[in-house]
Length: 417
Image (cartoon, rainbow, N blue to C red):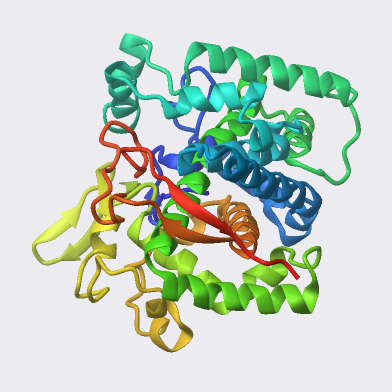
């Protein structure tokens, strides 16, 4: 679902979660930063992919995958075999991000299997070596070239390059005229064409890296948010019922096909629930910057230019001075009359400012669609002896805040009228 980098025009970003795809120089070594003006050029040109107009174009794809998701859960109920929530929703988000980035269709939502899903499964598997690679990329980049560390497994790198070249060829090659990009791949091709005209050097590796990191950063963060949302709602039936009533009212007003991104984004309580999920379970709990100039905090502290700065975002999200009873799942804290009292820059699941998550709207749209269709079709209840949300283990080896154990819920089909 999105980037967890922080905000300030004062700082130069170092790689963090989703926005790393705007900062990488090669797909095989994503620890190397894109300095301005290349970073700014890429960001400016890719924003076209995340406009409201482009996101509306994904309605049909996302709605189809939501139908597959509902159907798969129905099959699992009949067979009495259930999939871990994170895996189930990762299947769903892989299909959507894979199509939005590479233009590839997939059946992972319905079947659990696809070529792209094989790659994203590698992303979800952590080891000591991979942890060392990622730690070096983020905190000791000088070690990356020494030891040949890479963000992606070699097999994933090879796959992304092959797919990128295949799709480009099928679409008419690099020289095909592109007036209005219809997806991320078109936008990347247009960037390549414009760079040649402007005598900029943007290699194929840079282009592939943007698409690859969009998948890497987008599928798992969104899946994690959906996992924790469904799991919290299972243990909070009063919140689930209130949310269901709001969704049902919207469905009755607009119809199932009318539940598009704009309608879902306008549902007040629905978005309070999602904000509370991202407060408690920010996929990336820290924000990182490098000071671009000396910055005076007070008489005792000045941050020198070139100093890496890490902000404990998840710490602020759990600080009772900012969010009373922080361990409580309470969407009401984001109701308009309450949200206005939240201190600025204490809630930053997507960062803030010019370097905030470029894919925020895409990630939120994916989450909204998926949750809405699941909740409209099924009542969610906890399974016997399941750990409560506060008892559930956290993944200790990965980069993102994710469940450290399989989480399951019970689905009760609703009477659809």
